[in-house]
Amino acid sequence: MDSDALDAYIRARLALAGVDIDQLPDVADPETGTPTRAVIMVALREFVATTPGALADWTPPTGGVGGALGAAYAQQEAAPLAYPSITTAWTGEADR
Image (tube, rainbow, N blue to C red; front, side, top):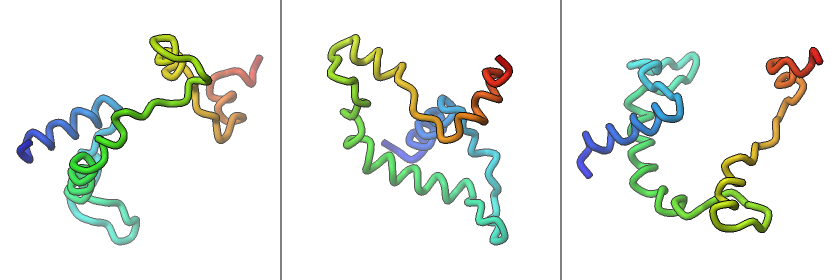
């Protein structure tokens, strides 16, 4: 895959996840340590070139449920919340 196609793939995947790397600076800021777009793209190119093969077959645990039902279960299973009190306040559950 050529570098332009790889960059387009990476940007499309980031966009699907709601990430806009265009908000990152062009010049490194030593005070905050914020990475530049170029640094992020280098790291993501390396990641895509080496890691997805190992990740492609991984699925979340389904509690023994297999097949299509297991896949649906894995999609619905939510990760534990680190700060549930904040989340309940955001969702309005604290007002109930």
